[in-house]
Image (cartoon, rainbow, N blue to C red):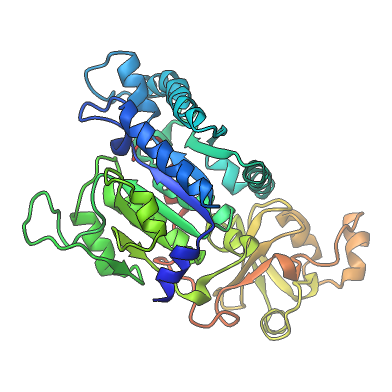
Length: 402
């Protein structure tokens, strides 16, 4: 199948490993599990793969170091535990990767690193430089500064964000179950593994909510959210049991392990398109007339001030904005060159009037065509919807939970 070929040919792979894959039943870090993971990843590197690891486990490592009897519930104690455990987790990784001659690097991220286009690009450049140098980046959310995110957060969505940032070929999510089941296999003998998912339908979402519960706070639900985000970027996703021997090698060799989420070939977007459509939430709305809409949709033009008839919200240059027609229906999204205050002053004017009104003119276009993504008419069959697009609250749930 086409999806299987894509998995087998994947060169750049993001691997997300959950806490349960690295710890025991008491949430304490198990060195043998870390060594197993390192050994398999090094073998992938030897086969010419680029690997980025998104790893949970800092809180688990901190639990062991602080000799706690259970995972803390208090947010402050969770953050302190993560702070203690993060250095232990990385030193453990370094010990086992170094034994195979592999250099690693640590990156601690927050959702702000993805929301800001400049920080998003800086992150991309850093990761690409590390990969080019043969280094394996190990990424986790910055639990010591996160507050709301750590309560319900997960590294599943973080791994999907990283995969889309790097335009990865494959995202592998390792957990403590064999994949997505029709029911919870721990409670029902009627549970059946779903081997392939080509579209995340409402039924798949219902299954994820009521089905197998992993050891993470979000369980299978956040993994489905991550799969949707990655699939929207055209990236296949595999959810598999991290305890299986050589699970990573068997996956890249084409063995049908776990649940495979296979996007349509037409879903593949470039980095900028995906960031505009799925990652950066619109800060405001620009309403345009029918002539401007036709210029954007049919002629592939940029948005000029002459076609703008209204502005909603408060935003600055570089922010993502929603572009709507005269009826208020969104048909495009893009990065604005001017603030909402400036656009209010120049709407309906010709480009030659911009400098006279504002006292400066860096751009003729309010939204340049290269920074614009058409949602409807220009992308038949890929209409934006509430189910297609994760809310920013979902995307910002990034912590050490899964």
